[in-house]
Image 1 (tube, one colour):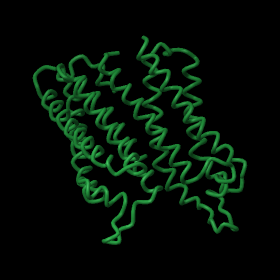
Image 2: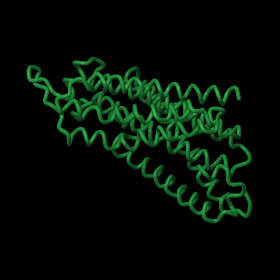
Image 3: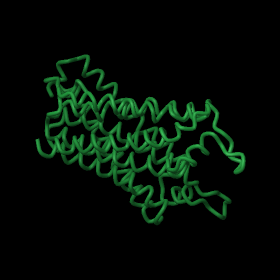
Length: 148
Length: 157
């Protein structure tokens, strides 16, 4: 890989960290990081006069995220193909897990509004798991660019 | 990203045309971005301060935190994708100063994105840094687009 391209990828990783930071702040502000907060945000709470989200409302938020998650994950993961991880089984596992977790993060809200409250835990787990995976992939790329 | 591995882009007329078309769209995006920012958020210190913190005299409400975070989050994504693709094309066609220009573009874009929450949460002083960095990365991107366009039209790359 050319040195100049490595520079572009390093900056992409820096932007990814900013994106992760903004996602954490947005999630914390709009929803909250507890089981009850997630449940309240999606399923509502009559005592607190919080109305439940509709499927249409969630779809409005989900729609751009489907494209963005797909594109962002594809771009981040495809850089790994240029590293020493190329051809390893662990890379394929990482790709499956990352796309799977991203799908869970996006669609778990629909299960919550349909009465499956357990999915509030799934939503929280998949959110943090996705961020952890992004950071892990970023670290793999950073390590590869710096030491290879 | 196939264009990053083609040996001579100029000889590949289809790829060259595709990249020029793409550069045209990035150029249109950047110009439109300035106009949209001017009308919605502001591109002068007074206007940005007004958009972020409101104005008591004109009964203008400050931007709420949720709207600000959504705006910031969206900006990060769009800018990172545009600059990654633009810098990849520029690196492919440019020989000299590509590291300097790429660094200028990326650092100023990151600085503008970091200054935005600092201005909202800490001090309005960061509005000035945000605007300076915003214009630096726009001008750097503009130069890189025009240069890449010119190089793709040249006889050899």
